[in-house]
Length: 438
Image (cartoon, rainbow, N blue to C red; front, side, top):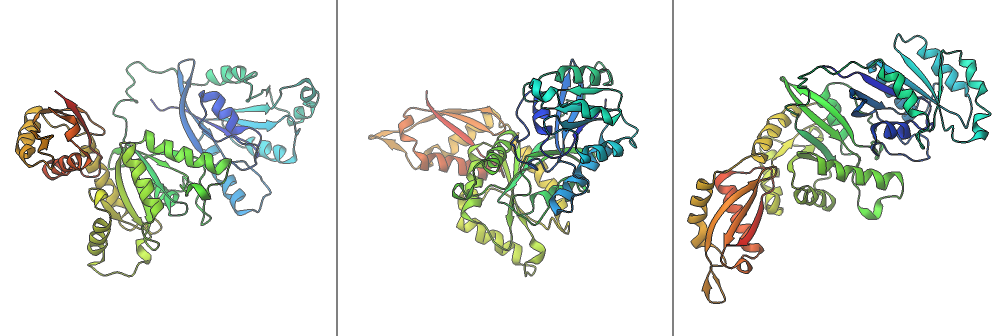
């Protein structure tokens, strides 16, 4: 059953993100008292009284704005209105009825969809005294709420609830969840452009200005009847360059997006090349236990011949052998060249991420490498590996039982990991190895 879409629209800084967070019950959208903090549409699947819907937070609508970013925000908000089944038009009770509110209301009268007119920030008697002006909108019902404190939000949701479809029994919409792929990297490497290209339309706001994306945005993409959930994230700068407030929270959100994904596509600028910051992000992906694909973007503006890709890979892997198991895809998100190559890599890495080795096969392998361990003795006594078993997937996790765990140093563990990769691949995924005494 298709979930209805409920979009929250309104001018900048009227509390749309606060209401979004209040309805879904957790802090997903960035909330700060600065106009224009939410620039893209932010989606979240949620439910009320057992009825499911998709809630959309949007950038602010400023009908008369000529500013490039604000005009794109307005365009994104209009797309959200077109996609929505139900609309919440939010206004600011403290500021009173603005001319822009009247213009937006006039625009919504032309939309043949249910519209709920909500006046936010009604959290004191002084504010209540100034709300009479909103009746000039001449709409059937106004909802006076405080998104921050939750006042009367349930009244708004109760009326929306009546328009939501009853969930059908045996609804399997949550089964076979699509893999979650986070697109991460430094600012302005083309993350939003890539997700837009994969989706096939302008779902995310793009701009040559670094830092345009501030929230982590989820997008479902269907490719050859298979579904993928892509997460566009804010650029991850060096800590010393991260400003306090919105940007620092955006970086935290990007790191959290890595934590909740299955695979991270680390996007790197082909012209600039890999940097220390890219390597730090790769280490974070590894530490988080996620699959990884490296996307070399803007490949269309690199001078090259038929050997350039192979030479690039060899040079890259020779410099950074500890990430030589991560596949590399050369793409141009702007032109779309080779972007489709990402999908088979995602499928391949997901298979490796979920790979399970039988105990028998694993122990035959352990028997073959046991005599070749770098640490074959410990305090004059032979080191013995008794047996091993796999205890988890996503990422693959193994427990190896030995007589002297202290003998298995990081070099030995790395040798075992590299031997496992030579045997089974595990391409693009981290391997967790736990050493225990028998």
